[in-house]
Length: 217
Ligand code: E4P
Image (cartoon, rainbow, N blue to C red; front, side, top):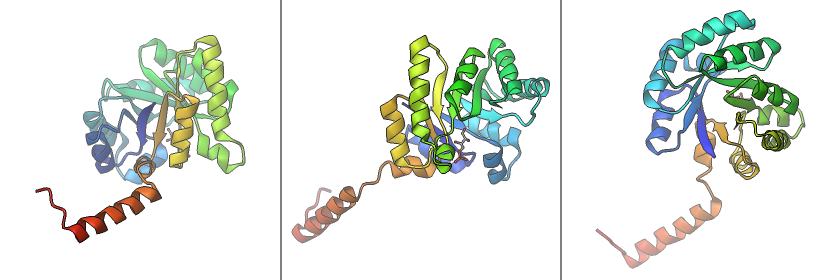
């Protein structure tokens, strides 16, 4: 499973990228707002750090304007994936931009039917939002499984990019179900390294190192 990092924070992207944990980046208008920077400028900087796909989201809601914005966004770098919302206009824009050779990430997906439409419109990535479904007591991970089954039934090549990931458990479940990619905030990726028994075990080893004065160099 590929890891995308869901942030526009440069320091966090750099840290994870240096560790080989970043196969791509996703941003959205809320994350750009949080960064406090100009969208074109911050996206360009992210693209200079990360070689994998960097999703940048359009701001328009009508197809023609989304297409215009998508063309502008993809001028930033070769690894831009234009992000469009899963609306009828978004699907139109997806089809045009995909046919022109752009990577397209169709976002705000909350149903398997929406995912089928995105695949038929040529999406490179479909982004089902796990956490936001969980928030309204619908099993977000079940949606990832349904889309996996449908895409495999018919050989759709659109990659399932599990989004709105809120916990390390979500990451494990995505990997078990067969999501192609999971995009998560830096803190969630770091939380995957934590285990209470690792901490407890290390604590004991440190006590024994001190007690026996064990030295290597
Ligand atoms: C994905 O591309 C979205 O930017 C993101 O995963 C949304 O996550 P949230 O529901 O935690 O805002």
